[in-house]
Length: 232
Image 1 (cartoon, rainbow, N blue to C red):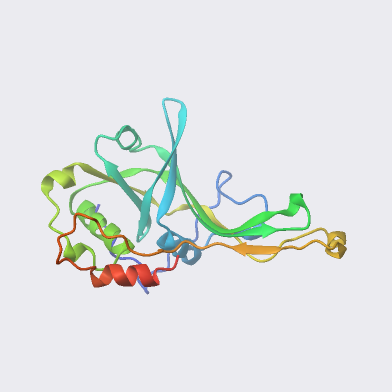
Image 2: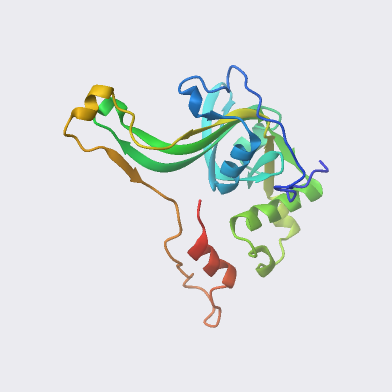
């Protein structure tokens, strides 16, 4: 547990490509599959929400949650009394993140599609403890909004104990990416039907102060910069 998630994007690191196994390799549209860590890490670092899929008592579950990358692991957190967090340690799970980039409108309903960037990872879940846990929570906050942690009150021991941090190695899985215009049947390009892409993006759309803010508390610089510049 000595690894620190604060070691993101070290220039001297050259992590291996993701393992391609039967459950994780891209089968359909395999040309869209990517297994290099540069692509995978870039997509994970740009993500805010991930989905954690797992099985408890022979029943499937999929939990949406905030996720972040720390070096060679993907992390998430939640309440220490969560049934999911209590039972998933040491078990296999699947973590996915998706960036929806556009609606692809073709000349036939069959060829309509979406432009997207996604990552699917498989592995065994580990509970993070000790100093690595505290460091992970700092990196979680700083990864979302750089500079925010230092402006907050100190986290209490009670709050730390009430929080569980989990992680899974970035070891097996794949990224899958689609870009570009529709791919219609050759004969359909002669039809007088409009086709193209409607781009989408996820971005802040302003700042809403808490009505309970003290009168002399202004929007901090890191929040103003985040709202103006964040691009995922």
